[in-house]
Image 1 (cartoon, one colour):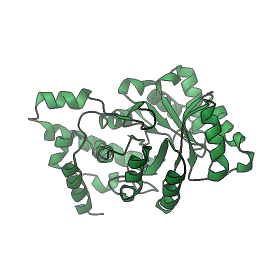
Image 2 (spheres, rainbow, N blue to C red):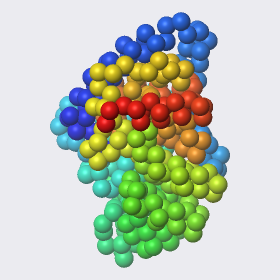
Image 3 (spheres, rainbow, N blue to C red):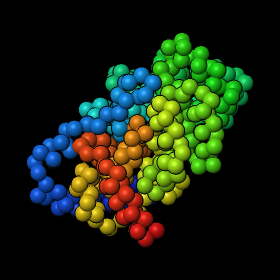
Image 4 (spheres, helix red, strand yellow):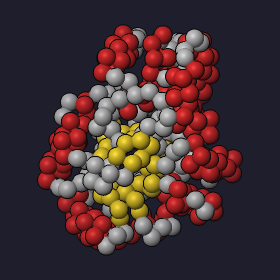
Length: 317
């Protein structure tokens, strides 16, 4: 999800209000619970291998920048992310120059090996060129191996899948998958999961967009497919933050370890056991710290998830 200035400003205001509300809400909580929330990182296993990943990563739709101050901010995110407990970076060929920026900055920082690097092939290309479409990702990222390569929005799916399998067998790709952020492509996602041995899927799912929980997330769990979640704060220009602007967190937020609205939204997502990791857009260290905090401590139980849904549904739209 690409952060607009409006989105960043609205989130910043909500973030400040949420922290203040969270401090008040957590007064009186046990020291043991606070310690667990601060230090207990939540990890989920990739079903096909058992490799474990932190449940909150970084989405990079807005990483294709050129202004020095913006590049410096992104460099700082990538520099400090491992120390914050983060590992998953998800990008795509269609995110402007994001792959190139990430590749260059990771090379400068020398910390590529501290990340789980995921990207996606072009949505529109001459797919008859096959391997060349995949090779473009390696060149732009300046790497010889990619942790996860995904077919983006099913662009060239049938043409590219044999090359994905070939590259995985050759050790160039560790995991293969496909992605969408559009509900209209859910039938294609279900078909792909049934027909192919995928390691990952990437899908849109959030407190305000729960359609994937009906069939896709249950099937992923049944099939042993890992799941990345995109647009966790609302997509296509419909950020959730304006809806909660000026509102304190509900009293029960302290029960799930959420002290900001971003953490509240992310806690809802990781409560689903089929979810491996959420990948919120993160362009500043302020947002990085906020988002990564959601990946520690408490995972909401089923009753708490229902309460979160009821609260959200009752808010004025």
